[in-house]
Length: 152
View 1 (cartoon, rainbow, N blue to C red):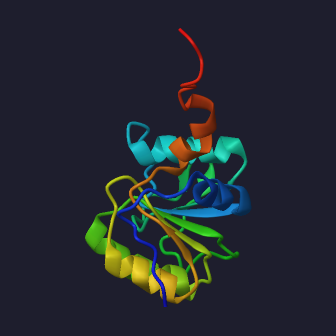
View 2 (view 1 turned 90 degrees about the vertical axis):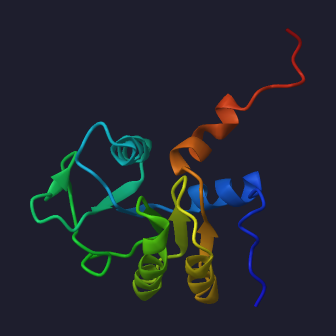
View 3 (view 1 turned 180 degrees about the vertical axis):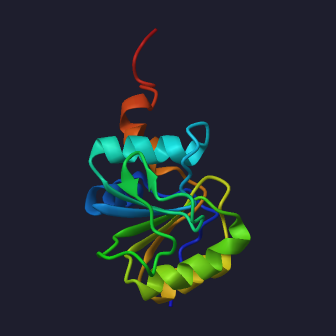
């Protein structure tokens, strides 16, 4: 088995290919707090047209932005294309195992979320893996990338 080197930059084609192919994204660590980064990412991805599934184990969090919240990946009642993770890096291997168990195609660790064991678990199951990146940023990258060929 050949593994990706997650210390190397991902190609733009790899990241854009994932974002074009996935429709349903389960966000582990989604927060109802509007000041949290995960809330903003959930909002933008949802408004862009992705079917967002917030995952948060707190019993008092039942919906975020009017979207039903699930306590675990296993409790989600429909297929999930991508599992996006807003949790500590040490939580990622367990989440990777859960993502494999539900048949997700992509494991995406948010900025700062890197764990090589989790990458291996997901890649061994045939999943694509992205770590230490934000899908919201990658989604809009073609529009904000500097145009170095233009004069000032």
